[in-house]
Image (cartoon, rainbow, N blue to C red):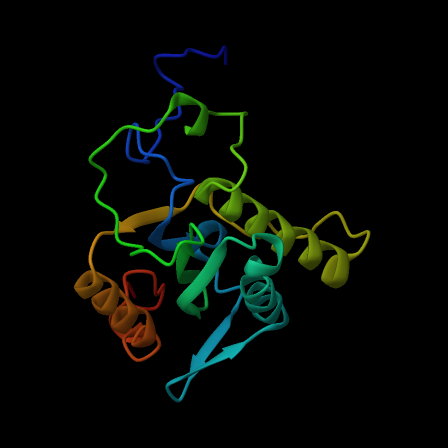
Length: 190
């Protein structure tokens, strides 16, 4: 099938004109490929991480080691997705709450094939690729049948107030308890 730019255009789900390198708090969700429960299971109200889940958690905690301008808020590794809060700091100790009222300089806007250093997209891309690489190297070695790990893209939400931050924090912390009702739970639909 020949590429048709009208039909095959990848639309961005990001906020148009927003500078995702600026200081701010962001709620992100990354989902496993086809929502497969690769990262573990919930047993008796506790998340039990599989070896893949342990790798996903180790790499999440290491994000600030690779991006010194990043702090991590609440996070949870679930059977088939990861929720977390990423805080990009400016070093000035100011508020991380942002309302996208101004457009970013065009050099800070992420474009397909042109990553922007320190942007949220670059942080997520590095996280997902490092998790995938380590899982493939450590768990599958030279086996070419290793599974795909991630669905394409990720969900993000710009956190705009302290109240919203606390609401999202509580949502993340209660994710394991609410798994039975979660839309990402494949058992829910049965």
